[in-house]
Image (cartoon, rainbow, N blue to C red):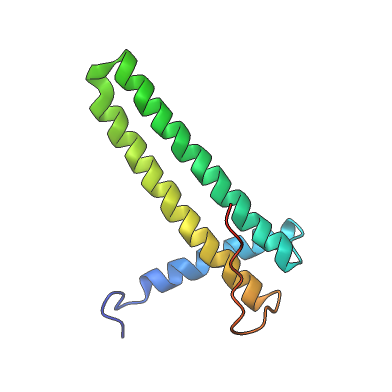
Length: 115
């Protein structure tokens, strides 16, 4: 029994999410390690673009509607945190897909090079 997940709810949730990502990757025809690593790179790039757009929207709001800055900044921060969390979990699931489905050797890290 794990203290941070005594009933295994998070583990089941992660398993369902991994299964969804795995099915999506297989439907998309991702059959090589390089293609899976490209998915990780593309996802990271999209996340950075979204966070940049959220920061730009917050800055624009500060200039146009200073009274709404707090609400917009909180909303953008919440969405950015969600995107970062989703990106981290997605990367974890794709790395697991590489290890389990594409047969990357043990001990070889499927980390993509930087952006």
